[in-house]
Image 1 (cartoon, rainbow over the protein chains, first blue to last red):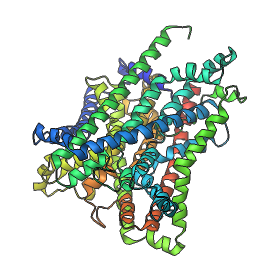
Image 2: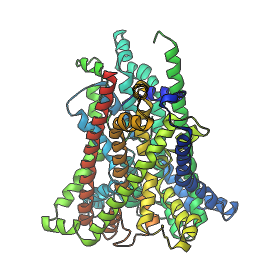
Image 3: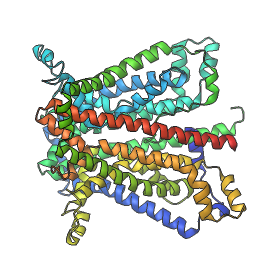
Image 4: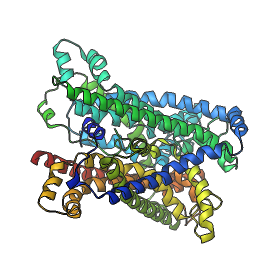
Length: 298
Length: 297
């Protein structure tokens, strides 16, 4: 796998002027046209639909939706869940990246596969496992019942399901970058007398800052948008255990289409924001790459 | 860094020079690996273990009856079939898209490049209701197709369509960097030696891209099999017709049939684990190819 920087460097300079090895103009035009049609049909059309449907009954419905208590509760719950799940996964991501990118050890590949697993299994399974552990008929269900602790159909269950589903995002963003950057700078800092945490805060963290920021934002977008896992553990109690995506489902199933799309539009804005950050981070990395190429000392 | 890359597997082929540093110069390994394994166990391994354990509480025959009930088999068939079709469609359009994005400069390239990751960032439920609205018999496209007798929403075609949406980034994001880093001199050499553009493409370019292409298709397939949110709206969940496998787990849970849900969950987990290992093997093949190219070049 080529490095992020190589990739971006190449992206910044598309290959041109290669007559002998380029496709004829008509073929090139056709391929670009197919790409445009595909993107318009599969990506732009659904996105536009969300916003058009949201305002199909006028701006009043949209405003009313966001004044509704159930909607506000759903937004509040979504924010709380993300505020717990995202920091947990960020700390994990940093620890995992430090151990996996900087060191070789037996079982490293298995660890990488296991970290990927939550992205790979159905989100429904991400909810199911916690129901089996903490649900009424689950392993710990009776004990939890005796002590009056509620996990499933309550906030802790939703946090757990969300944490499972968004588990690898920060780690997966950091590991490839830290591997390609190597650890020469960290080792130099150590030999100059810095201690472990100083190296981490002053050398490693600044080096991976943008990948980390993007990983956190992506993790957050997925946490706020999670549907399958949360739908299994939440119990759909209106105004209590409904996150925004679940609220979208309820409104939709009750035929409040414009209201459902209004909440969906808010979630879509989050997605657009996330893609914007991604583009910005890539643009920065490409610029850094160009700058470091121009200074021969590096 | 592509949004699909995190899924796309371990960048296990670490730069070689690091192998020499077997002595652990950097501190913090015990703490970092300890926390990593602890947290992984807590959030992922123990709960997944509980799933398998719950399923093993069933006798073998009860387990087998549950996971091979006609309704369940119909759901596997739909999940696998629709995911396969979706992955192949993404394979074709993903190849074209990755090629155009990597090789050509055209107005709007940056925006399209950014948009490709939309299915990864957009909540699945949002995609689900948007696609249903477009393809329902009274929707924009559904209404155009209805007079022709074509129904998409609430049929397996709708399920496939949602799965195509979900899988879009994978093929493009695995192929794009490989196309970008293909050495130009090989193509030039082929052209100099008198190969036509078609010959160069088939005999020089394509073989170098096949491993990454297959990886992307496999990723798209694996992601589609587990997908839930974007499918449940457009499928209408008709038993034997448009029920996908993850939905059956939800149904069983709603009937408080925990062992049944665990049984189907275990089958799906096993499938995911095996396919993840398969994708890893594929990826290693393509990383190996890239490395071989770099070394010979």
